[in-house]
Amino acid sequence: DTRVRLNTGSVNTWVEKQRPDSHYEIRTPAAITAVRGTAFRLSADSENISRTEVTEGIVAVSAGDTEKDVRDGYGIVAEKDKPLPEPGKLLDAPEISDNMSSDNSELHVSGKKLDGAKSYRDRLASDQQFNQTIIDESTENNSIKLTDLAPGHYYLQVRGIDQYKLEGIDAINDYDIQQA
Image 1: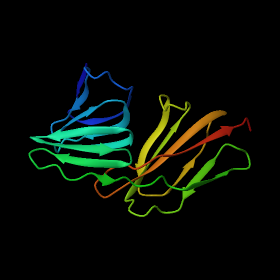
Image 2 (image 1 turned 45 degrees about the vertical axis):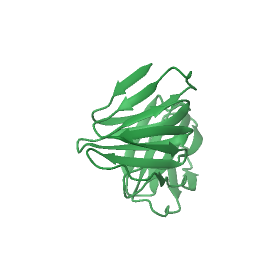
Image 3 (image 1 turned 60 degrees about the vertical axis):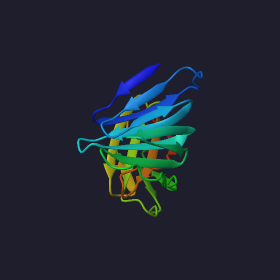
Image 4 (image 1 turned 30 degrees about the horizontal axis):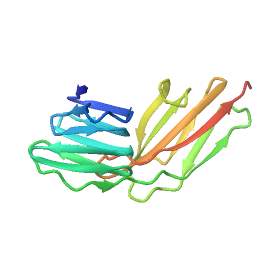
């Protein structure tokens, strides 16, 4: 059994399929999210609002005496002391294109504006699991310019953020930066 309390902040988690008698749940001030073998993101803010975004599998989100199943590709916003809404479809992964500078030290990544996106989250990491994150930022621009990158292999993750601050499906590219 795993039970986590998230008062504010966010977590991106992947849970192996659970035995029928085991539990994995994350509690926020607004709701409880429980899973059995899935990948999802969960955030809670100081306004007692939590957001659950499912990228693989299914989770159960409960608030008060109401429970909703949220399947992959969907998200839900829970507000403390308010009824749970129906889950909404997450934004699709953005289409991104890239352009490397002639000396291979700058990377310009841009994409077609994603319908419904109010902003974008850009993450750059040196590992495929994004445990060694170098950049994690939210911006209104659908492009990012990365400069002065040290030689190495990098992974870039970009996703749109909708009007409810639900973050969509990731677009992931990898890049080799060579010695200039």
